[in-house]
Length: 44
Image 1 (cartoon, rainbow, N blue to C red):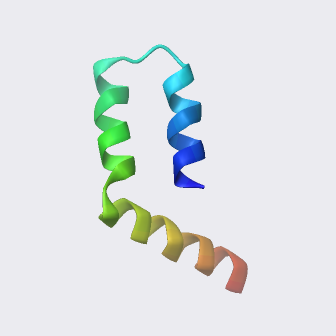
Image 2 (cartoon, rainbow, N blue to C red):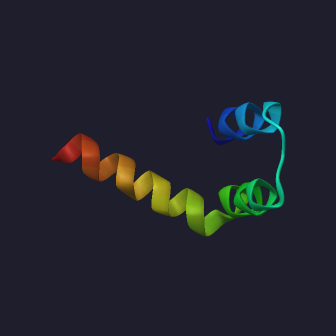
C-alpha cells in the first residue's frame, strides 16, 4: 500500500519539498503513524 502511494507521487513532477515528503513517507515512523490513524478511523 505504501509503495503504491510512493509510486503515485513519483508520477507527478518532483519538487524539492515533494522529495522530502517521499523520504518522510518511506520512514517507519510515518508508517506507524499512518497505521494508527487508519485503525482509529475504523474503530471510531
